[in-house]
Amino acid sequence: MDKLAVIAVDGLVFASWLFLVSAGLSLIYGVLRILNVAHGGLFAVGAYAGASLVVAYSAAGLWPLGALLALLAAAVASGLVLGLVVERGVLRWTYGREPVMQLLVTFSVFLILEDLTKLLWGVSPYYAYQPYQLLGQARVAGIDYPVYSFLLLVVAGGTGLGLWWFVRRTRFGRLVVAVIHDPEISVAMGVNLARVYVTTFTLGAVLAALGGAFTAPMISVVPGIGVEVIVLAFAVVVVGGLGSLEGAAVGALLIGLVRAAAVHLVPVLELFTIYLVMAAVLLVRPLGLFGRIEARRI
Amino acid sequence: MKSVSRLGWAGLVGVLVLAGWLLPRWLVFLLALALAKGVAVLSVVVLMRAGLVSFGQGLFFAAAAYAAGFAMRWGVRETLLLVPWSVGVAVLVGALAGLLVARYRDIFFAMLTLALSMVLYGILIKAYGVTGGSDGIRIPTPTLLGVQFSGEGARLVVYYLAVAATVVAAWTMGRYDRSPAGYLAQAVRDNELRVAYLGAPVPRVVYLGFLLSSGLAGLGGVLTALNVGHVDPGLSYWTTSGELVFIAVLGGTGSVMGPLAGAVVYELIRSYAFKYAPYAWQMMLGAAMLLIILFLPGGLWSPVERLWRRQTT
Image 1 (cartoon, rainbow over the protein chains, first blue to last red):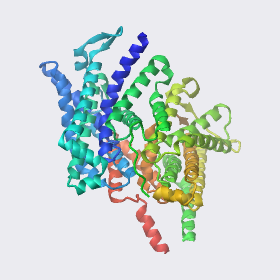
Image 2: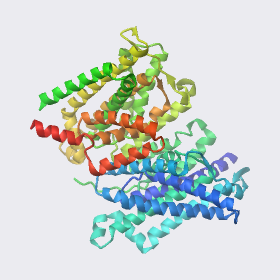
Image 3: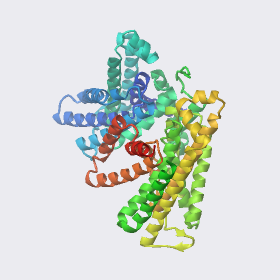
Image 4: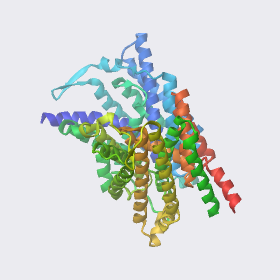
């Protein structure tokens, strides 16, 4: 029984992290129909920006909990700048090309971002443990958990709700939904496609950076952290159905819980769980759990 | 047209054979590595013919390399046995994986192949007792027809093996391109549904392409293993597969020559860039790929091809 509780808590925490790093990817795919490999690069930049800002903030000796706001600010700033630059500078020239070419374009952007972080921040690790340490530990189901893990739950939940509100309840969000369903008709109805694209991509970039920034305190920020994130986020999004936010949430939950179960019950399988879940889901539902079936065009 | 391209091929093989004599040793080694990679890039191109992009060729690349490693451990050191055996293992893996993967298209195909190669990566890392974990397996110098070479001679043997394998791979690829299966694969890329409605066996065409692709990737893998003298799980990591896709785009996917030329150019650039700008070489690669995709969509080789065609017609 205890083990079940532990698995549930571990799974939830991991799932909220997964959702945080994959929501942006799903959003961008939903609207732009581009699988954004640069997501991992944006994640890494967010992590570096967050870590260095937290280090600087903590050294200044101000209100300690402000470090969390520093993380948020770093994520929003880096996501905004990079999102605008990448979409306006590169991606917009590739609209209408084959999906595979677009994939390779974002792969190139990813490579560029990888080295950009090395050039800007160097190759030695950054430690931004202050927010992690600050929040201390809490006892749940007989085990001490860092409170920061639960903060992750809150951040992921907040992000999910915020996105839901943005897409379903705001005017601009409804335009986005229209574009998701049929870009051509939307343009005919007077929707400014370019604006929807640049806004969505920038929002997705901010989400990627947010995931990176809030991951930074839990890890040592080193070159190469972006690579793993791409694969993980892809898996989550594919399981949930490409482009579906609800799908990303369910996919994250599924993978998070299965992985936690594997860690505690069959540790050997831990490395494969994500791929096993993905393969199993795709076998039964080739478009993912919430994937939309597209009309076949002959 | 045909005789011209045949002449071109003969000339190229001649140059490659001479290169083994004339070029400095380190360059020969680099060239052998580039050819091995070029063969693996062809495996990506085969799938691109059918409109599929695989981000998991590392699966076959590593499977063949490790197959060679295990055979060596069991005492088989003969090159002429090692290569067919390793390629066979890769094709077997492809035959199994294809059952699952060949049903999917586009990004799902890319992701599933990626996932499978990462599963192999996980196995190679975890099964320390069998595969040596992240340390990998050492590959001793192989024999050729029972003769054990050493030092310089061994290097040259591996180089000429790579040249021979490249010729075989390029020939196979050319044959495939002009076979019914090859033409059908291109039709599948253009419009799969129409091909199916015309009564052509789309799943079989894709499966066949997948098998050929796994064999070529395996050939590249075993060549790389013999070249480097060491195999490690990194061969199955997704960046290895990504690199192959990158070179395919760099060289252009329209021809057989393009990917091979792309591989040589890539290896040269990489070794220099890595030496002089270790923290910026990925950036250069990324920028180069962006420029090619935006301004030279047919790849680096496409202007040459256009010229070639203009002269022969």
